[in-house]
View 1 (cartoon, rainbow, N blue to C red):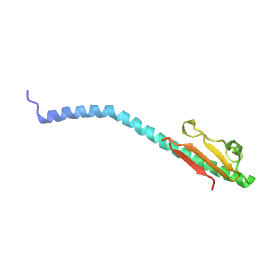
View 2 (cartoon, rainbow, N blue to C red; view 1 turned 180 degrees about the vertical axis):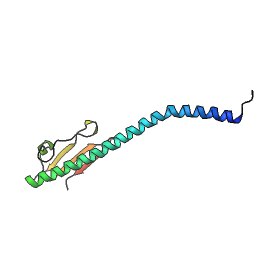
View 3 (cartoon, helix red, strand yellow; view 1 turned 90 degrees about the vertical axis):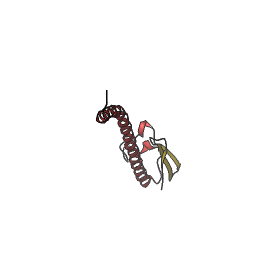
View 4 (cartoon, rainbow, N blue to C red; view 1 turned 30 degrees about the vertical axis):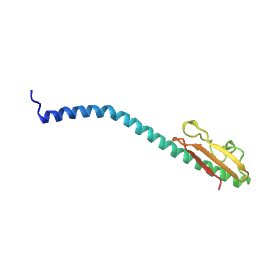
Length: 116
């Protein structure tokens, strides 16, 4: 039996398509997971920026930052958000006019904002 080159190409093509179709869903799932992580990190950064603005408004009204983030609700911010995966935003009052606000991003790195 003689197998021609075009037949070998067709057989190889069918095999390659079958292989690609089994690998592609895993790659798509990984891409979706990465997109979710990026979107979550962007939301965290936006939340932190909103918290920073609320803290500055509080400072303008009280000449000091609050003892905790719950003091910002509901006048300065509707509710205190939680970060990706329900990780808390860590607020540390260093002095009446100094604070640090931080949380963990999806890759495990710490994202920090400090008082100006």
